[in-house]
Length: 170
Length: 172
Image 1 (cartoon, one colour):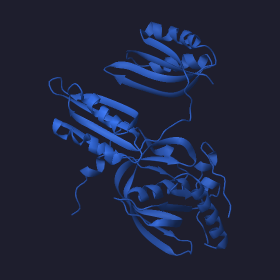
Image 2: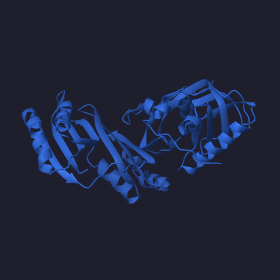
Image 3: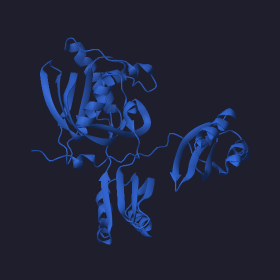
Image 4: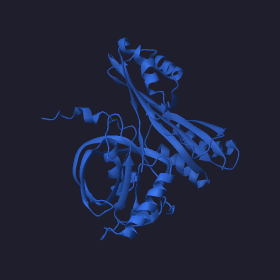
């Protein structure tokens, strides 16, 4: 286990697109352990993507504790994650270990469906919403070379209540 | 880096920010954090300017720009520095028919309940006959969110709508 160096914007490597993982093996599991240790060493981080620590492969880890209004799946390792459905949109505040001392508002889908491989190489499918869905979208953006800075909206754009205007289900 | 806070206000017109920042850049100044807003048709800006000289030198750089545009200029040496952000954990939105005293009432109660305001902006909309007042506040309150709600509950029947929401910042 080792703490890895976190790349910080404007490091151009954060803009590159990461490669899919071909095989989930022990070498990958060792890397995942180092990435997770690095995430947990930072203050308040609920997610991390491999390219943030200089490994340009499609691996993210999220660990969003359940909240009052928002259930979650806890610790998840997502290898080659792909979001297949997006629903609703909501503004929330984000920061990033790769962008110290700055937070800003970003629009994300309220609910997502995704599939990924887990640490054993098994296919998993998830439905996520709220804060956890936000975390996964933020991390998958890293795999495609995007930072939350690429998606900032003005703090004066008051769309915060947007989701209550959506039609009720059915 | 020595910082000064530069305040410029006056009649709004296109190009003020460009001219002010160009003059500062040409004289070797750095810009820090800034907030520009149009308030009541006025141009207003507060701008951290880094310059290792006397505050009067910053003023001398800007007078040739602000003077001809009829803008008022004020320069203060400040103790501030960059990389000192606090992350807000609560948002308070207040709106209602405009009347004197809304801000004093609401912010008074919020201060007593432990809110530290980091950012406040307010606007008057509606019409001249029926103006409405809208205010957004972001700040830090720590564990005291319910205390804020309790403190503001008494204003519910005064015709002001108030919403208190946590801001959860995702660090990813």
